[in-house]
Image (cartoon, rainbow, N blue to C red; front, side, top):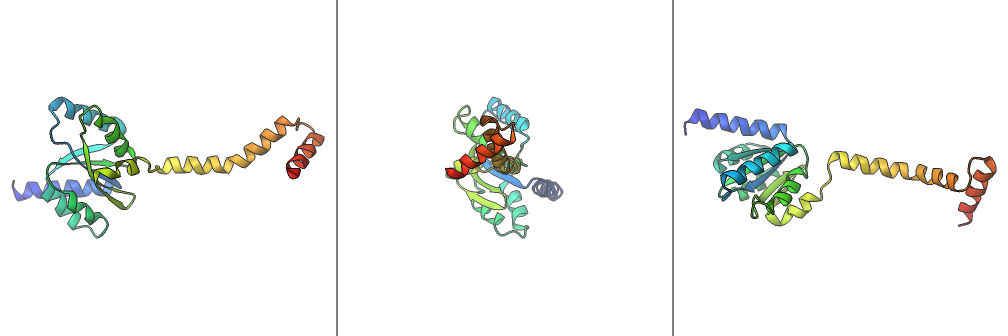
Length: 177
């Protein structure tokens, strides 16, 4: 491969890492053409970008980064490597878990860099699946903030809280308990 082509690939990988905050390093070797198409289609539907890369070129990009945590990914760059880039921290993990049943255990997770933390090994897949996205965390916080208001409204509705007397009665019963 010519140096110009290598430089272009390195630039592309660097741009992908800058664009997507999370990436998963996987092994998709052994998949036939039909299975690969199925995997790529599933990735596209989930908004995940899948690229097969040469380990040496990907390692070159990682070595050039200042972040020390990301450099622990270098240890898993052996054999065939495909990178899944994603905005969602748990999207690729869920996709890998769901599609492994259909594709005979592939793709296999080698490692991941999610929310500025490195995860090494296939045994970390369950942990990665349980990570919540930003939107899920916001929804949880909103639900927690709304819970007290819901409790008051429901207590008022149950005690005939349409009147002031019903409201006072409900509040006094709550204090006694």
